[in-house]
Length: 409
Image (cartoon, rainbow, N blue to C red; front, side, top):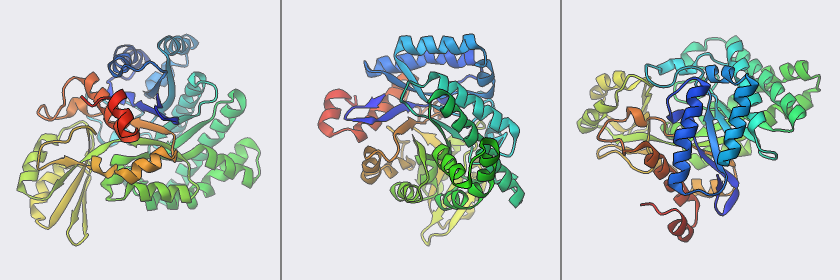
């Protein structure tokens, strides 16, 4: 949807919240869940959609009939897809995902082929004049990258993707960009790491690939790279690094790096101590990887790749002052004390930048409702998603407009 008062901003929620891997399952979720969310919000304008299409769904949509069925549905419901979560290639619900969510990574032809399929699908569904964003893995899982050759392979893959998206724009007039999503314990994790990659390794590997595929000069190839490859800025992930969201956004802007999409999300946050460790036991679930970042009063950092292993070792670190855990929790309601969330990191400075249009694509990305502890789950999934929207819209809109148009209760 176009945000009231800020028509250049497009807001959606990510369909990765709804289980499913085939196009039939994704389509059912759109018919049953996305329509219900729109109705709960009483939205009468066109409603933006943030798709999640697995590799299987992308393959299903190579059928012209399936693609056209989607077109007819979107037109009938006044939906406009403008973004795709192309991060999880395979299964994302109903079983262990953990580090498999990063596979295949950007060293592989499978990741490139999948992403190019998504770009072609999105180009078919994008309204005229609307740009499209696709979020993707931050290169790879850090433990899988061992040599400069690995890094160069990632850069070449991204160069190939940029070349394909440039071809799509020439052929269809639809502009699509790809956002690498920095995430804890990944090849790209922090803002400084990402800035370094975009300044050095990415252009050195990607520009020759674009030149080869499109027959361009180095300067022209660099323009293609900057136009089509950027960053998906997940507020949960940035807050996990104890980074200031506004400073990070401005660092990307100052470096001339495209901000492809902002994902609005929050992580668990809590002080150190026995009460916290007991409260966190309920969140040590087996589906997703829940990286943990701890900070002491002296500024020392301690990290664990997953919450279950962290819980066995935290008592040995009484110096921990604060913990942040990669467990997406609702924006609009925090867990009970001693736990809280990083939603307060989305402060007035952050919203001021968002309202300024620093990145027009905004996507609510709380996907963990089905694995939240029963006493934390806010309840009905449709009403929970609607509450996420209301929370975001209240931050974006003037207080008077919000009170009249999007009441919080």
